[in-house]
Image (tube, rainbow, N blue to C red):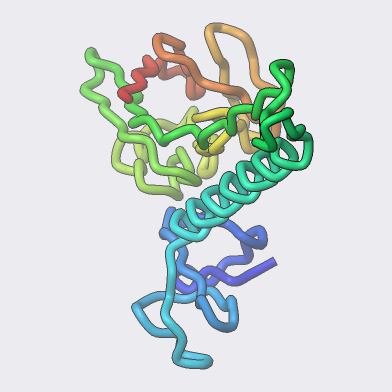
Length: 201
């Protein structure tokens, strides 16, 4: 566990955002400590956002996989009669899947005037998270009701955080702590409020 430098609450290791206050987290590129600002207060190293760290990790993994595929292709080449290296017709270098880019997430309810822009790791709740103003007067919504997440492989998801009145996806109750993938056009229900999912590439 680590301590959020903004609200001082305990949160999971390697979090990108604080699931209590919604603060975007930065990590020192030298010692790895979490903090705010451009320089680490512990060692003076440069602070880097969790999103940038993940992007660099995925880029490195893709390059490593590609280099490995190319290396395997070269090792299986054969020599023709003219002395030139030729590749067997059956050998193909497998394409390297590119990381899924982060689509913009919007959750809206036009009749209630609610338009929420998704923030990776943000809490939806009556007392915590960046969307408090929309739910603070609704006693059916829990203080920490649900959480939005973006995963590079699967995209946006929502997780119920043991709310009192539950979270639903297209009318089906979500089990607490189960990440449910979101698709364009889905309907998310926070207690008694329906929100339409809009994904913009």
